[in-house]
Length: 138
Image 1 (cartoon, helix red, strand yellow):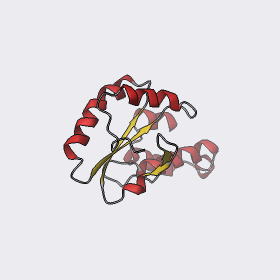
Image 2 (cartoon, helix red, strand yellow):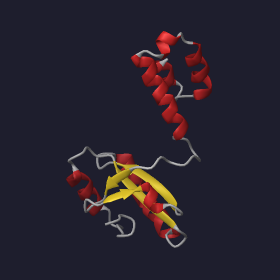
Image 3 (cartoon, one colour):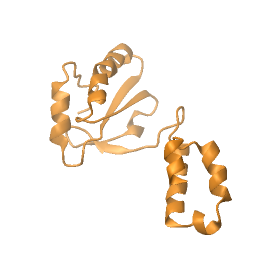
Image 4 (cartoon, one colour):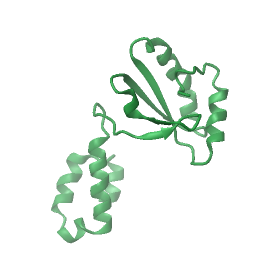
């Protein structure tokens, strides 16, 4: 089932009935519990659903939470310094920010770089020619 979940992009309409048909011993096995947890997570992270709250430090080490932006339109931008496609999209993200920043719109950019490698994402931000202080909270 784990392999099926990968191949069908965690299609819950297909997976949930199959999972429910498994014997209880398999559903309660470590692999079964892991799959069940992944299915629960999938239900909370879907297009149009409210994103789960999280907290991560900003450039100055100050904690920033998604909930800090309650009442605003938030564009969640997950990226990494080593991700070429992510970096290529950055000018488009900045353009969207510039276009809508006066309409209660913010961009919350979240680096997926490894913990302890702040230097990598700081350098990537410095290389972004159109960096704005309001896009990257300090």
